[in-house]
Length: 286
Image (cartoon, rainbow, N blue to C red):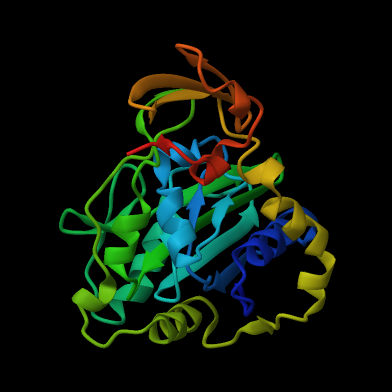
């Protein structure tokens, strides 16, 4: 199996490079490995305001990223390793892929299991989730491995932004989590990468530097992935509660913009981007 290490820490750049390899690359079975800077990544059909605390993300300087695949919300940082299988659709089996990951981890002394949802767990605590994209000819299966992530920051970031959110959108299934270095003290992302490379390709890999051709060719897609129209503009219709001048209001949001309130009273905010709501004086969403 071809093993490729993507060396740019930009989550938008890595997501774009991954998609380009999937859509335009050969059908040769490949495993991509990469590490992102701290960020929160939501699924294609999710509501970011129901999944993440946008105020916390701004405080910590973490971007919000929307995948082009489904699934739930995950936290990335330098202690999390991302993996992606790109395969021929014929013979593709997501549970087999997860089993192969577990065999590589077993070489490090980690005993884990695959759940019915294809999460990877130790006991009842999750350290890996997956998402997928299938075409007639190819299959993509990507996931996370919490090796040494900052779980306190994870818990701070993965909270709803607003009170009592109602609306469309796929909700994440919340699970207790664990890092692999809680099982093997001193375990690092680099050691896990070494184990995976040995297991999948006898220690042979290719590296794509940040200025590599793959990143250059996928730069436009990376810009599209980081655009407000993709990250927030694709948010499903929803409503939530806020307080203004001691009054409780219900606010409707369509395509990431405020459309109305009940009772009326925030007309000056109609059409505004809801992720900028905290910039408005006199409003409270706590």
